[in-house]
Length: 298
Image 1 (spheres, rainbow, N blue to C red):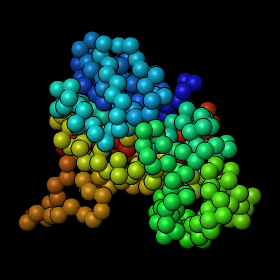
Image 2: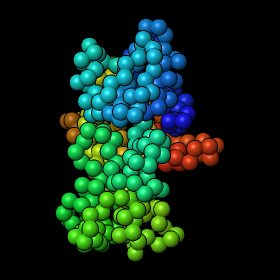
Image 3: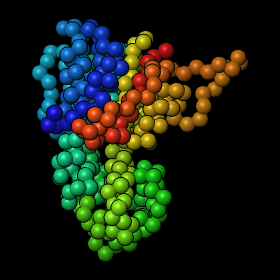
Image 4: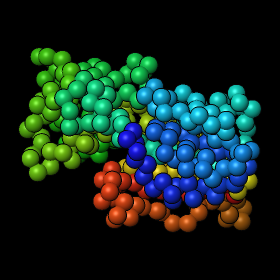
């Protein structure tokens, strides 16, 4: 697919255990690859709702009476499904992170490969951009983001350098940022470190971890009995949240035990962690960090 090459396509849709007359949700529509696969397994009475806040993705809508595309962030999944009279669904699929299209469109500012404005907004209506974070956030707050979301041990030094440089001139583009931080980018590790920096800023711009938490907390109330959740994540911060929520229903701590030492959690894990095959990674390098986890309503 030109817009986005779906990762773990068959495995993630297999995980939904699609019923012909079921109601399903693809919360990360993108190029529509996962949605098309779900529709191919639905009968004429089945229904698929999809979410995507990116205006570019809305141009990929599918002409099918069984399909509805909602141009909103999936953190609002329950609210918008209720608008369509849907309170329970049979399966929900999420392919987290940035689409190939967003990485490849230079002006979106997601990629370290292009000299583009520091943007990184998935929702183009948002007031918060990467440029605002780099130029307006305090040194302490910037360091926290780089440490927590980029897992960079030298976050304080990076933040200090950025704040010093922006006092001379606003940092407007990705290559300007790269130039400011060049002393921290040894040739052998330049790509890896830049990717961590861009990941940290992007997560903050789009509130990705907060969005994921809000989404996951709604899942137990949305799934039918034996309904399925299928989630593909691309970095450890996302995967950790998904794994913990499926296992415990929480993001921190452990669930409380009753008098008999039993715990009550809303979801049950299905199968083991699924990762792409060597062949899929060879065909699509962006699949290399993908992890698929599956849960079901107990």
